[in-house]
Image 1 (cartoon, rainbow, N blue to C red):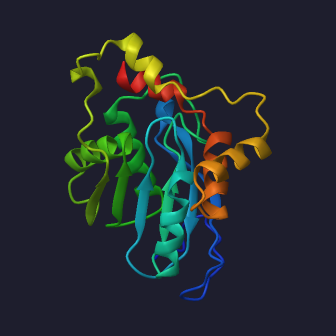
Image 2: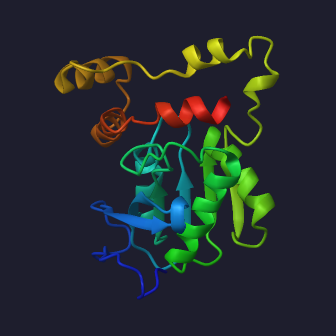
Length: 217
């Protein structure tokens, strides 16, 4: 359950409601030269809270489907655009695991969010592993989704030039949204419209290349 001291203004949804939507806010974390704003998407609830971390060159929209299911079951959910991603600030430095873990700890403190379950996907799982080591006891549990063990430098083709090219997001400049939506529908006929919209939202806000590059350099 979210505390009354935070800035979120949630609209309560009945348990089991299909119309569960997030509230978006920017939360200031850090201090001094390390201060920045993180963009978040939050769903209201009364049960065990969840905090969700995305992977490289992605953003909080990757968790929309999971967040909606958790919220329908009564859990408050916070999905975060990590630094350098989505709509969060993009400083020139601070993309090491220690700095990103500090962001997460500062975010939990700023929202007075105690003992949440924290999930990390892909690179977000690596962030979560570092966070768990640096801040033991801050989370009720850690959930790793295809992440927590990624070590790009240990790959046989782990030279920076090759890794940078492989991780570089596609250039969507000039591509029409309607065209992308139709392509997704053709390639993933079993996807819901909500899933398609979340994917389009990820593409629109996919500003994580700086972080992707610096995080594996």
